[in-house]
Image (cartoon, rainbow, N blue to C red):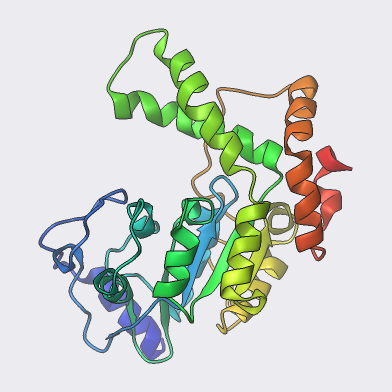
Length: 288
């Protein structure tokens, strides 16, 4: 076992915790929410940030990265920090930037990061992130928007009754119609947000990961991701061929429904094809 692996195990076994455990959607994070800095680790800006997209394999991708011996947990030990969701109409401050950069730590030769899928399309999040992490590399998981819509629709419909603490028979219809449908369809249109990210961060700092390509050849896809992050590409994560955070589907789509959504997303996909010519677009049969 090498030194990095030993340090990683020490982190995982560390029983001491923060004074206050932050939830992923907590608006006001302070250093009281951080786990203590592990001996030998150096607080540093994130080496990578995943910024999209929910329902596109980001949990699997993050699980594989977390298993790499050169990758270490952030100091909140959360996949999703949602730090840039709460700026609203305010410019990010120097203190907020300083705090974000201290959320990550690793020993020499290692990196730390997070993956908050909604950063890509959340208003102002990309610009604030690029200001706070000017050297980070960004990963964007992208999936056929029809399939991504279906995945996100089912997930969000399951979550909202618990959030609202209601069980009435008509509540699912209200949630579907007034909360979920608009959110998941708008978040599936990513071409404008992706173009903004590339313009702000630079094309060499952004890697887009096609969900369907990962399913077809996970070894090749992970090797490309690790090379992009300057990590050992020969490492094979234990989660590479596992399903991570797979969700049941209460709502399904027939051929007519798929065709309707494909027409809705056609303009966005056409623009994606110009931005990402390297993708295997034959894997998105809805848009032949």
